[in-house]
Length: 141
Image 1 (cartoon, rainbow, N blue to C red):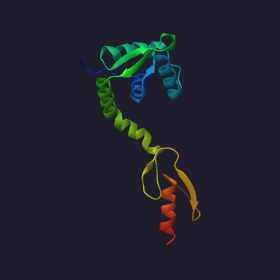
Image 2 (tube, rainbow, N blue to C red):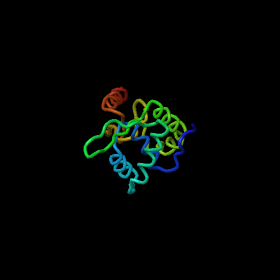
Image 3 (spheres, one colour):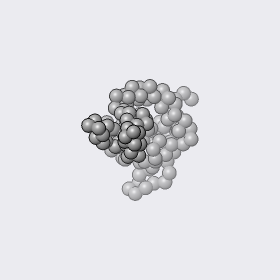
Image 4 (cartoon, helix red, strand yellow):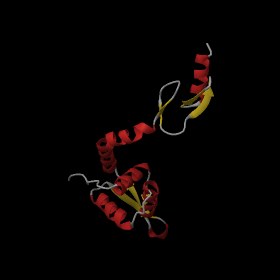
């Protein structure tokens, strides 16, 4: 059986969310909507979850409150997500690269946050306070 085609952002986010942890359909709808900034309908999520289940990429466990099924990736589903990540990896890298900052001390890449400090009249970004301390010590010589 060939892989399911991912042709929209809602489907991509659905499998990525399931790779983080099990969720019920309503949780997926809300989170996909929050992350994409768009209203997501049950018609976008539930048929896709049924398709994932038919391919044995997800399974459901029990019924939570109000008769909700929680969906979990199967080992085969995790392999599917890995294949998707490989397929879309370059695209993600292109999208994320402009948002990266380099630590002024160790040159690691920082996606969000970091530790900022003004040293020698310059505003610098570090991955952590220890790198800022190391930078200060190295430049105090």
